[in-house]
Image (cartoon, rainbow, N blue to C red):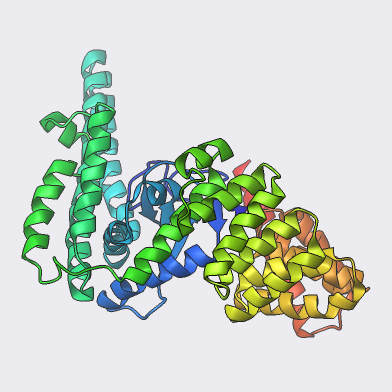
Length: 453
């Protein structure tokens, strides 16, 4: 599990479910196991929607609120808080089916239409208000402007509720076509309704008008009628998928929660795999190396070829300063996952951290393969830069640094690194052209930042 801070650029300041949310310095959680799981959970829905397999990415946002959303592009963002609250994989699939409904419906793009309509109402009310003011009626002017603002806001809310209802219907259709039960969807809406009651959210007609979403009770009633009649209503979740979900959920909890909370939630007398998985992180975060390794070894005793159990043991050893001992489990995890970019990045780091120059060639091979499959991996680019630097290839070390800097919103540093790389690379070679591209991208980012000031 890796936490990578990344600024998400969004287009609107209002947080609607089908919209880009207002956020700065949002952090993305990257984990090979969880990302593969979420892909496997969403792919049947994607194909049911008439899209190619793997056409939609699922990104985990480090946010404790119970939420999921889409932005422009074929990406579903799922908050860590939602995964923590969900009881099973089917509930998360219900949420992803709904969000897929937003993607297929083009709701992020069509929100512009709703916003423009609201803008016309506001502009019209402003003109009426100005006319009233010129006629000598200040109170009438303020009233017209206020009513116009309320009408504009109501227009936006109504537009959002319509999109939500549309996404509910589309999600139910995708679940049905994929042969996935809608039970989880209903269960999750009931969870949301319980949270609304707990925090005192109103559920009357006025609240319905002022909400971006239809009321949870209304959505449950509508969807229940659809789901219970569907042939997939009694379909069971694949036991292996459910097992993987429970492991990933426990892993996420152990990674994010305070160790004391993890040990209360997963006490030592519970010896299930999810409990041990969570406790590995709890002990590791408290620098209790022996306890963390004991739990990791217990997991591997049951499943010695589970690449993610090998990964977590290697990560614990590496972060405890035992790079040499981490190589064996990380190498095997990398091999078993077909050089998964995130696991390979950790293995590459371990090779570098041994400070044994005989490992540099293998580290370069591993990390080059990692960035070839996942170019949006600043951690791997940083490590590759260290490898090039240690081998005396300064030009490519600067190019790798530029790659890492441009994707972590450091355009000034990226420009310097790219220009330095260009000076040392053969002109018109692929690496020279890539350095030139980064230079142009960095200049464009700097210009945009300058314009915003």
